[in-house]
Length: 351
Image (cartoon, rainbow, N blue to C red; front, side):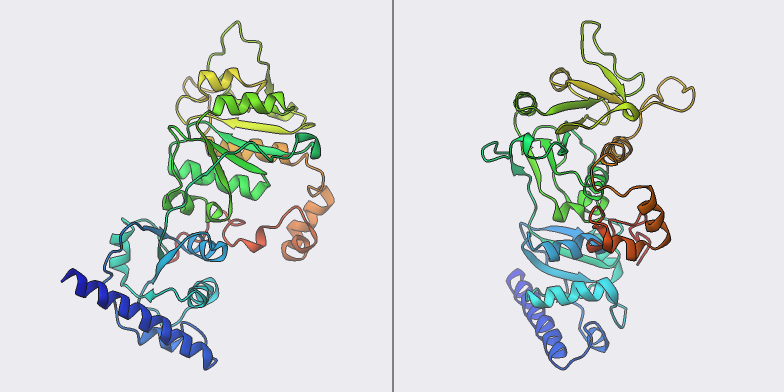
């Protein structure tokens, strides 16, 4: 019975792909009347795959082509597909990926009622790349390099939001600790608006050793604390600086800690500087810190605004007046090529 269902699912996948290929050769728009004539598949589950969900994650995963895609699942019930959904379908056709049309209720259950926007894919997992020191450019090659180091970020939505900020604001590399860190899951990809699909995320077993090596190579290792933040030992000589007073004049590693406990003692001891965000009012006890993804956005924008080539005040006004024309001229803002990364809502309410 299982073998028969698997054969039937694979057969329907081939028929679906062939159907759309014939439509494309006839010059018809993918997802038009052809889409409504396809039969619903029983969605026999595949092994060793995970379910990527959401329009931007699926679209960017297809563009990046870093994952094996077993099947594309498009929600049934719509006569045609337009815009980015039509592009998802075209990219799947080009790679001969089977396209199936489950009902909304089926997709909801498969995604455990996450917001999927009617687009899901069965894909191979993404893994962080192991960090290899050899062959890295010396920091003197570019004094304004900025790497983001994550020490034990565990919440997938926080992790995804941090990746989205880092990609949007131009961080050069992401390094995570292999231990006690969230893996690269579909929830992380959705929270990142698909940024995870186009970024290289590295990991290391020895985060403290990595930071110490970089410091010896001339990098500034800047950790983060709340205000007043975790208690720094009285014997500590690590200076604490407001983010507004930080001058970015050398290659920098910005280190963010765990959502609850912050930086580990070993990692904090490897920092040469601790950055903090000062509040604008008197805060009650227990409210001295911000969510780690919010901290990432504030600090990264504060630092990256010092980067050469970042839009000056006149250019920023132009961006606000005519975003499309100005972004074409600005090399510092290249978000147009990644849909969803430039929008705060990421169209989560779409069906």
